[in-house]
Length: 350
Image (cartoon, rainbow, N blue to C red; front, side, top):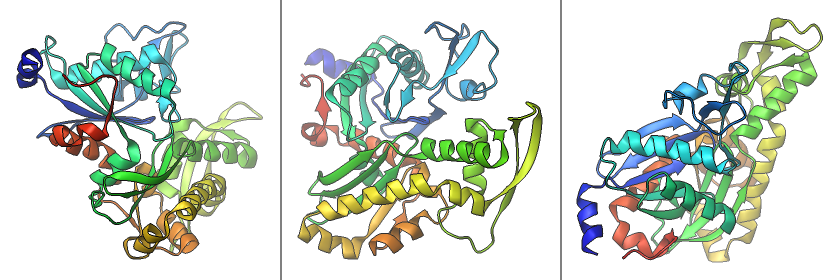
């Protein structure tokens, strides 16, 4: 007990939003201190991170789709869970060292947000990766709970709060009350699937191959779920599938809206299913409180309108939706002793 108390004086405890697209790290009392892509550059055919040790995050993302034959830029998380254990460990280790500085003799306590639908095996992978990366103690919090707290919803009160968190790999829909999740659903349809839908549309309609980064730019710049007052256009560059040569074309927001219909429809269906499973009293509360959207997908133009028209509830986008989950883990850190009983840990805190 004394040793852990002593370590606590020197350790920088941190909360981590371990996302498919981006990893955010926050520190107690300082807020978000790191926000980098969940990408690692490795030697091809191995799990060895590039020699300079800095080929993680922003540097590695710039390599996506542009690497020579000897290098692979890898996203070690797929659909919100760890797909490559060793590379995730290397990435976490880099981020923890970057935040913790040179104090390698002390190991931080870490709160990590994970999708609500992951399996026990997937949770074990998160524990092991974080501990081997340098964490002293690991606590897991469901992403919808972290997102709701980060968005400022009154989750501890005896009334319903509903959160829709659309990340890169998963979409979390949950109704919360009395500091717990009443009803939730986690689907592996999210921002990455929107990008894939755009890639597929460009291939079918224009015989053009575009990469994930280009598809993401299209989604951000002209993507929408509902008609816009003024429709947008964008010049897109890629490789012609017939000639094999580079070329460019102009696409419109109407076309991208059509491309995004399927993933958006699946997300809306998940929201409807959660509402159908809600207890009557909680459903009654939602008539007044509505739905709060978080995550990068919440920024898609018109998505709040489409959901509101479908379910008949008011829908609002949280302030700074990209950081809601990370801010939620920060609040858990600030009140770790109070929340500890509600968090999952691989061992009791001595």
